[in-house]
Length: 273
Image 1 (cartoon, rainbow, N blue to C red):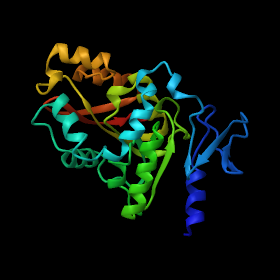
Image 2 (cartoon, rainbow, N blue to C red):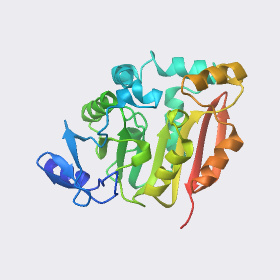
Image 3 (cartoon, rainbow, N blue to C red):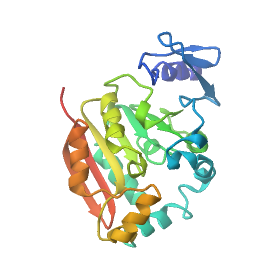
């Protein structure tokens, strides 16, 4: 398969985030024949976010310039260990341990895997293979560019990136054999809306693997005052019962949680049709 054929195959997967119809490539853009909307392709990365996020009502989205600049240090000792120890506690798993836990929970899938809020491909690129194609989406251009650079440098096949919001995924229903959502579920404005949109694009029985923060016995999140401060800063720590309710309301079953300090990892399975 040539590079041009591979890129064409990737772009043929994307659907309009508004009407969910498949898009076609036209003059460096992806165009929807149904609603006449067009989406640019920038440096090989389709961009499905047309609004200016700096004016968003969501404070997390207004911080996008900071997140863009953070991309280069995201997987370094300057970010992950500090965040995990602060919120999860000093016995929190390392980044390498989290990657192993998350990827093991998806049970070595083949086919297509969705990586939601993928950052620089931290988790998704670890499971990509000739038989596993990973589609990462994120709102940060800086993170996506770093992810593309990581994939190119490491020679990893079958990893694709697009700029999109979890609330409006640019894919048809029932497309993915598994999904990841790591380090971001606690930041989404509406957890159920995000989970329902993930479920929509997953096949019945597909596994969702998540790393997020819970109400545990480590870090500042073990204190009510720490959870309240974090909530005002845009980070929500989930009670296990709360998370299970959200999953059930969103079309998932078989909630399998693990807590390490205040680090919550879990898997759940999309309900059968």
